Amino acid sequence: MSGLSGFLRQNAVPVENMKTVVSGRFLDEDKKPLLWEIKCITPAEDEQIRRECLRRAPVPGQKGQFVAEVDADLYMGRLAAKCTVFPDLNDKALQDSYGVMGADSLLKAMLTPGEYAGYLDKVQELNGFDLTMDEAVEQAKN
Image (cartoon, rainbow, N blue to C red; front, side, top):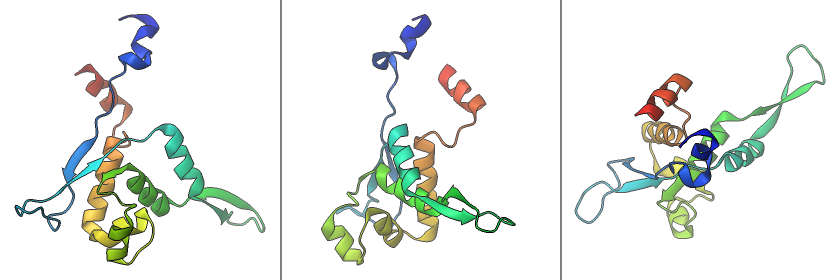
């Protein structure tokens, strides 16, 4: 392939879903940890999540001036919820069992702080937020 043909959709290598153990506390009937499934989202979906997480923050030293900024914690929670394929975080019975409403709230209720932080790392990794440009080039060569 030369020229632009390598960029055609049919020639792009798809990002595969990741299956991973997030917590040793959720076990199947054989007492083995359940695998969670994470998917990569599109830039348009990411942009929508970012827009939903904007807040107005005052500009220091500028009375009455505000700047839009992303609430990072809210963004990361919603990103993780959007990327989660399994378990279904929108399942009413699952949300009811933890006494919460909303997929991002459910994640925070299900996981310990350390598990949650580790899960956010995996979500970012799958979506390509963990690689520098040099690492991405090196990975593409292999």
